Image 1: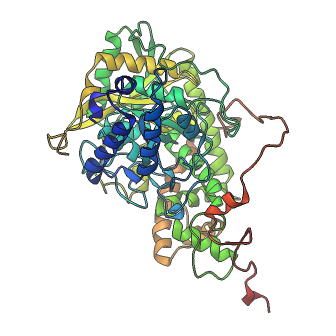
Image 2: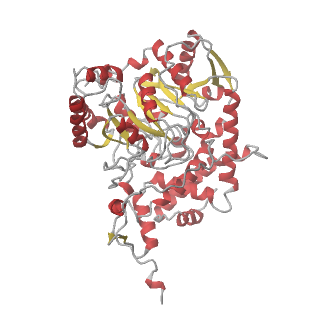
Image 3: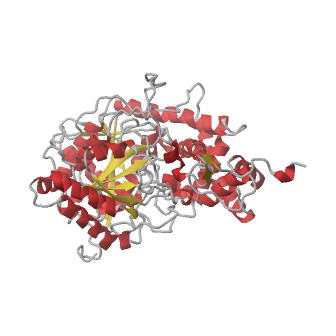
Length: 490
Length: 100
């Protein structure tokens, strides 16, 4: 199946008209993965037998005309628990973990009859921005296999960008959906905090984590967010806010829309070619009838330190559950219970996870709590206020997703601070709980540039509307990676 | 130095992690760099600013106090590394060498 030539609607039409069976579509998806994933490394595990069985069952009853996602094969990030399908969060400590329940998003997708083809690679416990922190394998950028796919949801992004699957789910704590979407030239959305249930998402930083969709078009993204949104009694932070049909306002009309561009998002830390690309997108929006104004988010430069204290503190608490007792790796050769804890954790966690547990434990400990955790939580308030000020006057914020395009594999891995700065433009959005989207906005040296759109809380509609109008006015989303010029041989 | 090797060792013991001397050296250097980076927050005036620890409107969600069926013990034991007769097996809690 050539997913570069399809979207959900065109696949749905083929399935409903029985020009294509769900079994064939599913088998062809596995063929795509077999052909391409040796180069890309997007999948940690495949669900072939169960997926084909489910496809055959669906073929017997037929795909309902009013259920656009029925029979659509999807990739799922490996920190979303899937019943009876190994879920590792790309960590040795969960190398053999078989969940006994489904995440709420999986229950919702099953109800809509999507097909889970496999679990995608990621930075261990979603901690990282390159997928190099996976305990199991590297994933390569779909456009240039010497480059990282971004992260932490690098596997999901690369799987979609290389045409292995049409869509995938990821999670975003500080940019882990938007940054890999940017690096791979596809559409990635982090919904408003509370829009999507976190039940069954292996917790990293509970006040920041959100699950969201990766797709090749804005409309498909809206369709997939429709499917996974909603209040969940299993997640008390999920919201009962009304859920509009996110596809309803995709009509290309954004006349009069007020767009703000923070000057901090176009400053010196952003690569000139990325800045240039974003300036071109501004011209497109103006041509479409939007007004674009420069504004200031004065505290956004503190986003990275605030994030690393808060996310690490929450992680150090969340990851205490990995103690070698009830699930996960248990060290051999232990003398007492303390040994089980210390050895299981020390053997099971990778270095980046240990660094963050350490930073979090340090930030929360007596003597440092006020200067670190409390201080960060106060500056977080100022960051939220900055955004609130902008959204009292504007509909949308626009800027780059990441300061650079995809960097080389191995380039930053030993320098945590440089690696952390890659998230400077995405992190403030998580701290304030806002929805954010990355979509293709140009290319430089054969690598995609990502534009980020940020909306007010629970206003994904405006974000999708603007993204769709931009997409219809440009051709960037039609570019596909050529893999040395020959898609078919790749 | 913002943090010393002995402080890092102390934090590791709180976090139930152990490092070799070589790892300790590497982690101390990296932690030091990270702590230096986060210390730029001290330049922000936060007098009287409340903390934000959650960005949800819903605080303290209530539900009806009704019983619902839970997960069976058999299911829950599926990922337990060692168990016997429906109980989780762990090594001795008290280190016998300390008992005398």
